[in-house]
Image 1 (cartoon, rainbow, N blue to C red):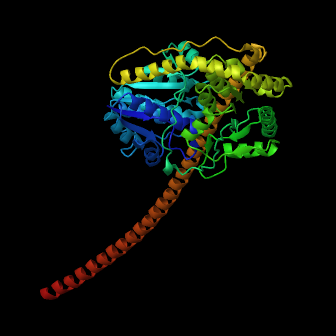
Image 2: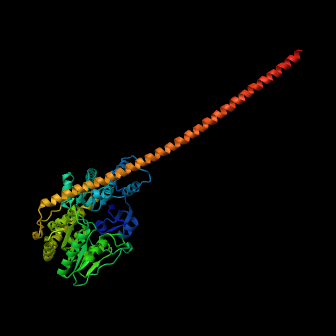
Image 3: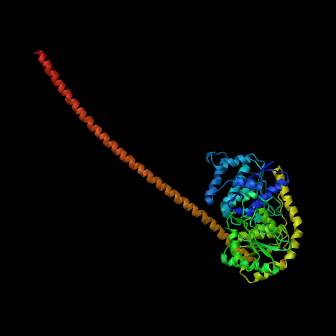
Length: 525
């Protein structure tokens, strides 16, 4: 069986979470006998080295909304038989040929089905459209849908999910969004839950391997922070995170290990730059700012931590499945949906904290309480783990059954009742809903403004091109006018020469007639 897998891999920026989810899909398929796997990647050569599979170039969609919408329409026209919709050399033709050779398509999990990352959403929509047109089973696994979706993007998501044979989302918010659209979808954990990390680390990856080596009997805290700090000033956020890490590290005599999940390999940017700034603000001595590690090593260290503090999503996923207490910090509503959703799948959604909490004096009390309850949290997660693992195994069984032609019903995770309620925030739910609605409104406006900005740029470009074409045509007209005037002048000159020659001819004829007449008269004499 030959299966095409689409994950957000091969990017110039290495992203632990996206790589881990794709690793998980490949591992789960292989564990169930699917060995012929073709990955769709931005960098097929790199992905082949990392994953040990075949890889081909994926589709790259334009970023501006109206351009990606247009390109998707053109691809659908090609699939409907209109081969004039795109040039013969367009990238989509090669991908169509690749999917023709496969038995099914799997879209790996992620948070790409949202308007702010619309070019990735439309890449997935195009792959889904190709699979449908070719009659190939399509599986969509472990997605966050939204929360920001413009009208056209919402329609695109709904059409994509309806075209699939088997689908799942990874949090209650996304599941309800699909249910409200009358789209059947399963509810599962993130694809990288229970991620196996015993792979040989890919030496060809060329990542910065400045890493932490755990010492026997020496507990450590893992921290991961993205550069985005939402509505909070970055200096204020970083100072607050430095204080939180100091507070926990001092209480537990812990090493602090800062593991980046995104950076350009070989460059101390994105997460690493964020970590370096937080490190400078800390008073704890035993702090390690790691370079960019592989997905396997990042997950392995996170799963062995005493506690995890993160504003990124996948450190929370790795920690939960390994029974590690984790403090999730959401800086915006997108983060609340994902981090809160991951925690809620384990009955701990109420332990998430947002920017609304960081600025309050009560947050320090919560941090102390969280640290004091760490053993109870670990025990609770360990109790939940076998059932969660079995559920996720059943999901992957259903995926392979679907690839083989069956049509199993998508499983829906039964979310545990909230546990350890003493860690609830005490925040009135209406405050969270109000904040969420405001952020969604701002998000929709931002995406629409982004789209309108590019429409305006395109209009200006089209106007500039039209003006340039007008100027070109005006120059051509002037040249033609000048050429015509020159030809008219030449014609007048030729006419004058013709009239002159005609006059001379007439004169010559008259002269000849006179001479002939004279000669005739002479003969008569």
